[in-house]
Amino acid sequence: MAAAVAVPLSAINNELGGVLPPSALVQHSPRHGRSRGMSFKAKNGNRGRGYSVHEDRDVSIAKALMFVLKRTIKEDEVDEEDEEDHRLVADAEGWVGLDDVLEHEKLKSLEADLEDIQRVIANASKPRFHLRQTSKDKAEEPSSYTIRRIPTNRESIAAPIPIGDKLTLSTPDLPEFLVYETSYQRYPLILTTGTIARAPGGTAYLSFTPVTVSEDGAESRAPSQGEAAEVSIWIHLRSALEASPDLLFQRTEGGAIITSDEIPKGLWKKAVARRPDIGLLFEDGEVKKELPAGLRGKGKGKARKGKDGRGQGLKREGSEEESASGSAGEDEE
Image (tube, rainbow, N blue to C red; front, top):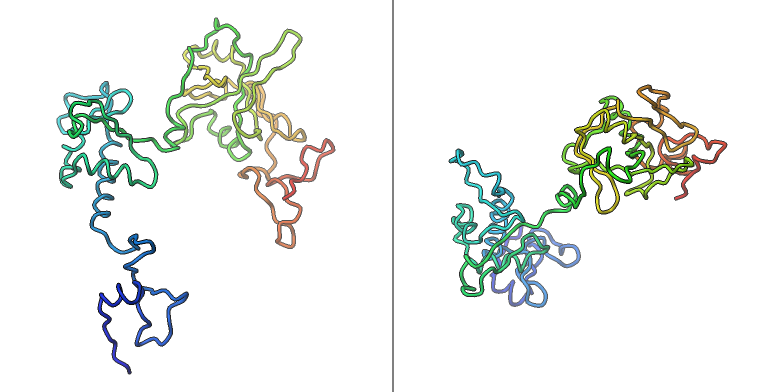
């Protein structure tokens, strides 16, 4: 058997362009002419996938910075009796002094400085932090800067939004109804628990579509904030406020009505399925009809395979034969 021959590193870098030659033990070249080993040289002089002490340190600094800023607390949350709380205090907008951040044990152990923070932020693949200069006198000093974390999309959704005053019985233009939209999958769970509540880890509020009723009985409904609902739960707002005056409903700038409170089944007026062949599910505290078994636990818009397994004749999951009104028509792919 042929002996393995060590190839000098200089030969790999200078003569072979960073690609290892075929193995002496396996007599064929790697697929696509590339080595299974690490490439030490990349195109245009850029570093390949090799190890870099400099970049590895920047990753550590970014992780430490995220750790510290995610655990900041607001000024009104400070507990003077908790001596073991090492979290930094941020202002109302989440800004923290950079000098305080660099003094935190996570950053101090890495000996990070202002230049490191500026480099990490500038070279990030996507923005994660905001750094701003608050004083022009000492541009080279960390004390002249504040920093905060950019919230993720999920956190942005859960963040408070501009809202108006609390809705009361004396509020002008009080909507007649509020409509909560949900799916065939979630409605049985809501009915079982007996309340409309926020999902764990979801948004910080429940959103309702307001419906006004004119003197001639015509309903005017604001545009839905999302997809058309599969099940709509109606709440008569005036009756709900009379029964539970502590309920906090507020109107957003977009016109929706939101609350962080739970809405028990006793305050529902009715629940109606989108499909007319199903219709009224619940009214005035009484279950009028159960959802068909084929719709329970099914999500929106999922395709159902045909007999040949190729998904022919795609329909919304659980839909039965089209009703006479044509409300349950097939969705073509």
